Every structure is written in C-alpha cells, then in structure tokens.
Length: 301
Image 1 (cartoon, rainbow, N blue to C red):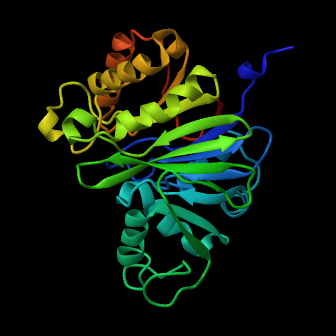
Image 2 (spheres, rainbow, N blue to C red; image 1 turned 60 degrees about the vertical axis):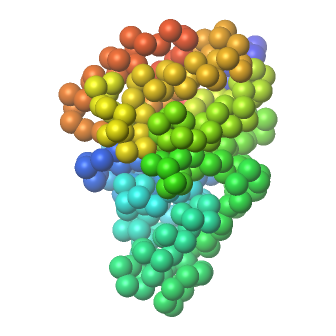
C-alpha cells in the first residue's frame, strides 16, 4: 500500500496562470480536497474562460454556469489589482451566493472601488451603495485560522509585500493534516525592505519537514534580465531561488528535494515565459519539482 505522504491530498484546476495583459488567462486556481467538488478559487483574474477551457479538457462535465455556481464555494483574493479580481467582478451577476475572503485593506479596496454601485453593482453584504447580498464579504485577520464555508478546509492569511507598503497575501490552506501554500504577488524581502517572506518560511518550515505541505504556489513574473528597480513587487528566477535557499536553511536542503513548487504569474510575451522556465530549471540546485501549470489542465498535490 502506498504511504499516506505519497497519496494526493489536493486537486488543482488552473483557470488562469499568467500575469499581465492576457485578460483570458489571468491568475485564478481552483483548489479542492481530492475526490470532492468543494473548490475554492485562489485569486480570480480569469474565471469564465478558464472553466470553459477545463470543460474542453474533460476536467468538468456540464456547463460553465454549473461549475461556477456549484463547484466554486468561495474566493480568496490576495490583493485588489485587476488581474487578480476582474473575473470575480465580471462573473458576479451569474454567480451563486458564496463567500469572498480577503484581508482588511484588500477588502476595503474592493468595496470602495469595485463593488460600490458606481464602477459595478455591490453584490456583497457590506460597503457602499445598495448591498445585493449575493456575496458574503469575510475579512480575514492575519495569522488567524478560519473555517472555509461549505468545505472541510481551513485557511490562514499571511502578509506579503508587493511594492512596499502595498500589501498582498499568502493563503495557507489546510485539509485534514495536509496543507497548500498559495502566494499572491510578492517581491523579494531584500528589494521590498521587508521580512514578510522570511516570516512565511519560518511558518511553513515545520510543515515541510513533516511532509504535510504538499506544495507552494509562487510567482515568477520576469526573467533574470529585469533590473531590481523595475520589478514592481515581483520575483525573477534568481530571486525565487535565493528565497528557496533561505527556506532550505530552515528545513534542511534534503527536505526540498522533490518538493513541489508551482510557478505562477509569468508575464507575456511567450519568449519571456520560455526564458523564465529555462532559467528556473538551470538554477534549480535544490532539486525542487518545478510545476508550470497550464490553463484548464488539472493536476494533483
């Protein structure tokens, strides 16, 4: 019989994998415990086009509306930039009642600038204008574990820096005794003059050592040629591997061999994406299992 640590704990359906200008393929990842359809959506840049692609790939049966309304139990928004929320906003009229989760600053930005009865109807239960109360807006406190409504999972929000002092969020999702870590956009601590990533690595190092953390979703937006002063709160392959080296100093280097790191938010053009992939593979001296997700193609962790 296979060891428990080798059995999949989560299933992932990427609805959008890129950063930047491709509005049909922006950051959004459906995550659920295996053998369930109790998904949450980690960021929501692209929803409809991603579900459509997943249906084309035989990941889901039925219509886009059925997947949208029945399978997605809630949304976790890492920060309020449009490439992480536009799918949520545009699809809200066709959606079912569910919860939108975000930290306080992110929630305030969404309520003040998007769901405000001016740029868009207020589909929430708080904020400006007339609340239609389709969505429950749940504000997450940093480092506090909470139950995810209509699922068996819990989540803990942790702070990131995305062009300091602008905030972003990491979500540590738990199912039974297994975890997944999803990072929204983030710059390296050294450039951001922050300790948020260092604090995050301390938080998750024991989970890696005990083989409870099934993977990390983390962005690499630019190739190494991008100057630090033009990172705009993002990572390059160099910076990702520097951060992974810091993590390995806490876990022990061997603990990261074969550990799954899902690379998100690569920015077009295709030549940059290919260069990012090549540079990451060349610099992967920790033996990480690098995963480059594709829109609409399911995988397990």
